Image 1 (spheres, one colour):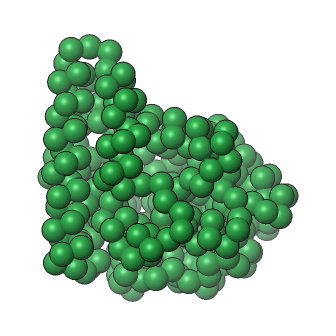
Image 2 (cartoon, one colour):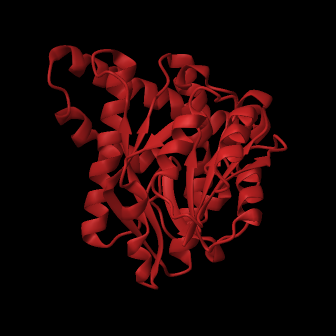
Length: 293
């Protein structure tokens, strides 16, 4: 048995589909806990809760995503928890693929494959496909080698008993959970047929907002002081360049790939400036990205 936790903010147009795709996959005595603060999204959740007792709303206090997840973890009835977001939706068999690996007592988490919903025919959409496909290849390679891998915050399951409270200043809560699970001696499994579909930013400004927030977590002590590592500017440059250079199909995509190299450099410079040097707070970094909704 498991609990599904969905964090959401200002997503009344997408939260319904997120709930519905989960409802079709959980047993009659399962639960979906939706943690959200705004009135518009809350009303949609309450409408679903009035029709299906498996759906429950938890009032978010707007202290950031880790704090919202902590509220959900406090209310979750089961040790196995599935974490996902209100602006994505999962494949029809995703949950049935995430849960079985936990029959192995040494498995601490299972992560899904992220799929871009955006068109590959423009620069931002192309970037989303390149980055999600690169992440897929990396996870497959590390899974075959039995190496540590990061869970995707868009959809993964883990044993709550391994980390029942997330540091509320963590910028990349999925990475913190992944590292803690590995440090405790548990394996993280990749389930590539369990898929989660994501709409990515359509403007460079929104892309930077989203990426600075997530990549910033990798220069926080929670990650830099960990005994296991998978992601950093150095590792990205060393391991990802070959895949990126081989990915384009056209000259236009080659140009977009070179532009992405410059964008990633810009991103990591901002990360080091805003997170490591200025130590900007989570509240200031957590700016809504409207083009993904």
